[in-house]
Structure formats: structure tokens, C-alpha cells
Length: 65
Image 1 (cartoon, rainbow, N blue to C red):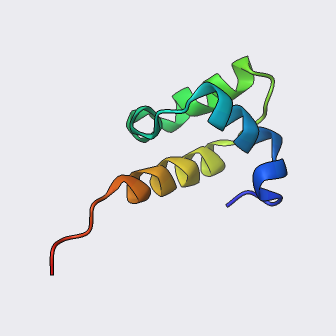
Image 2: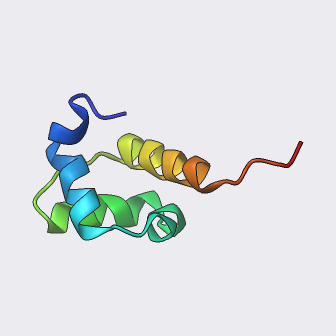
């Protein structure tokens, strides 16, 4: 998702400022873009959508088999 994974400035900012994945999953993309800008990181809307989708998917508990 991020080109340099843990070395990404955007990913480091997200981990430091939004450690609660449920909060990220509940954010509209515009809020995530704005949050990043407030922390001097540029995240475009398509990447924000991708981040929110990945967090939402990660929070899903698989159905019992």
C-alpha cells in the first residue's frame, strides 16, 4: 500500500497520530486527508480511500467455518 512501507512518512505519521484502527476505519477520506495535512504529510484522496479500506478489512473478524 505504501511504496516504502515502514519508512513512509505518511505511514509513520498515521501510526504515531492515529493508533486506533477503529477511528481510522470510521473516518471519511476527506478527514484523513485533512488530518495528514495538519501533520505536514500529503495523502491524496485515492490513497486515503485505500488506507481506510485496508484498515476496515483488517478489523473484520472472519466468519466461523
